[in-house]
Image (tube, rainbow over all chains, first blue to last red; front, side, top):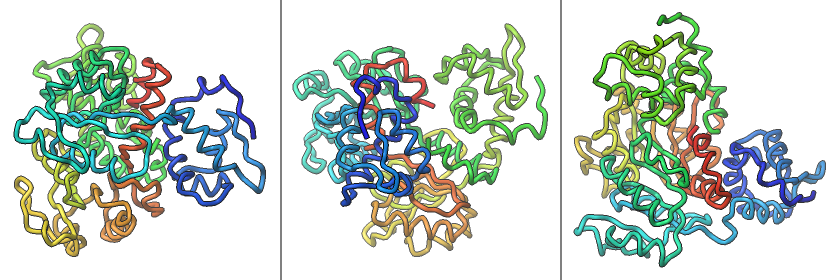
Length: 221
Length: 221
């Protein structure tokens, strides 16, 4: 099992998106080694998929013995760039924003919410766990002072694009967007991942109707 | 522009997952016709992607004139199986469950939450918009009586697998799962889509670090 520097830039996006799921399983593993079968089963992927994904960054298990857990954890964290931690701002402290802040406070993971902002005076100053909701007018200052690089957007749809512009101007490079807006921003320097409940439900409806359970794996990708 | 029956079963999953985004744009369109360029721009995909996706179900636009909006809306709704509406149960009425129920009440879409349940006596009987939170002990009865086919799971991780088993036993065929559990159920008749904030944030971290904005399109897929 070896790691070749410089290869990591060519890891496919689809593999990158599975690495956090592998990482979660590995971090909960008490054994020193894990087989691709055991890891795949726990993470929800086939052992073939695990072996293929790991081969992209030069990790090869030993037959019958598996992969060294500590090595994989270290490499995946390095590849994802979370070995230094990731600082996140939640924009919008409604039910969804509150749920997301609590979730990151209660669950293991390297992304840490270090600021939550809202425009509503009735909400500003209230607490969500260990965080106090701050005034959205201070968004730029907070991003700079706390060296925040990512944001989670849970504002209403009509406020989403303006919020995204301000986040981009402040230097935010990635936005996880829960507002039902198809094109949040056209700025090329900002990565946006949309999560839209209604679209997810409508897509699931097809698989319910079609009765195509074998396609679940594909849905997860 | 024509529709050939029987071809729809071979539409790729990746296309299916883009149809709801197209549908949202089409339903908000006032014009009778729309070009692939306009539709793609509004939905966040390239015009080539739009043309390719629509060709799978036999919809071909007329050069310079585009697609007939009413036809596309009808076909996409039929293909997704949402022309009859989709009845959804939300399991877990915490902040996230509450946010999701409100979202479906406030936003256009064909999936309708018709029941929300919780185990907490302090929450049972309270209202979320027009719905009253019901006792999770009545889950099976509610699924049958209201002909619910899909569920959204927002319970804590330790309760997720047991809830999924009960939902599957009750006849639920698709679960949108927000609990941080990699393998919610192994029952082949149930489609599960996991949405996990921490995994999404960790995957985004890679793209922030790598500075690969061109891959945003792929992330959306």
